[in-house]
Image (cartoon, helix red, strand yellow):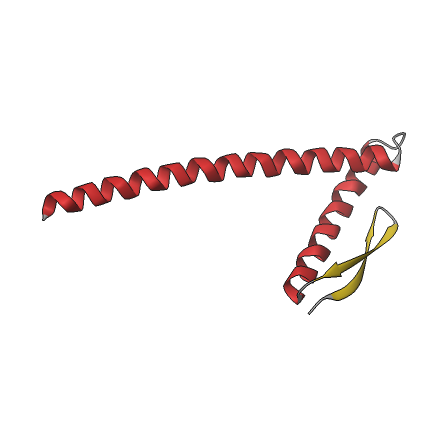
Length: 94
């Protein structure tokens, strides 16, 4: 069941729709993380605009997401190779 929620990011409130309680929790956690990172950049770069700081947060999060996707692909390839090795080993035992 969809639920209308409000998230405050960098002092600005955004109306959002969460399609489940789990999604609402995830969205609130994400907003908290964005605000934490934004606040650290706010202290580090007080002369930058809110938009500049949000862009830095977005860039860092996107870089992390891409790195995680690449790692997942690598792990998937390694898991497949291990599975093939185990299957070949078991086939030899028969």
